[in-house]
Length: 375
Ligand SMILES: Cc1ncc(COP(=O)(O)O)c(C=O)c1O
Image (cartoon, rainbow, N blue to C red; front, side, top):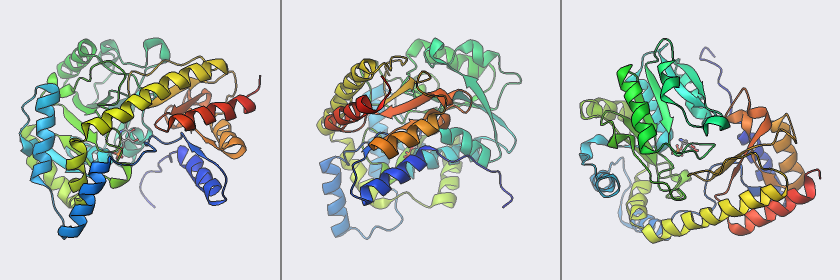
């Protein structure tokens, strides 16, 4: 193989051991991956059934879905986005690949935040782009500052911003996002804004980079708020001048995303009550988990503004987060993600808890941890 070697998702090893437990009839609480344990909204599943009955499910891109996504930007952000700027993708992952391919040349430097979603860095490497990390620790609330962007030398070609962010749940409010985007513009740094966790939050408003910079490339997906990770459907909003060419990239690379998923997604976008119901559950899980972990002595964490993760410093318990997570799955059947996935330098003393599970699973995980962690 002549391509670059890329680091795996370490949480994948936890998933495999969790699956083996389930096959062996042992319990497993899946808090390792960022995926809602409740499936898609009932309306989405019903729409998929109807589509199966009457649609041949060929390669298709539903104009209605592009229009519905454009309407979402009008309703939620007051933005007029032409449906031609909405490109459907096989999840945010495919959107990131197409954005990297279209926006950069091999060898270009692209900034990203550490800790951050591992595939940002790993996909950059696979595509022969150079990740430039901006360290955003707890002391700066896991948020970048304009000064950090101004200090990048030389200026990178691009930057990936995420709000709410994985694994920290940190959000960028309008003043900070405005300042960050101004620094990027001044230095001609192209912006990709990953907004995949929009809609999953605990009070703070969701600001789209498009409200501030119409040239930002926005990535989003049906995997999180809409609880459809396995359906593999997402979207990008791209500048008008790039839309046709990025669409050409997407069709060459992926043809179309799943047609069945597109039918379901149209219904999911209107399932407002159902979506809000689960976000309210995540809100209660978040509070329960913060309190429960505090009672177990895990207090070095910042309550997330959004997404469904707690990123906790467990340095008093381990300096080897992978080992800690392997033991947690093998010994008590609790799936956690090791910090080394998100931060190769400091992640050895962090773990990420996903609370997109049921309240009963949160309670049980806390009980199991209480009996397992040293007192
Ligand atoms: C921040 C972030 N971006 C992108 C993705 C990829 O999501 P998708 O399922 O839409 O490909 C994930 C998945 O966990 C994520 O956390």
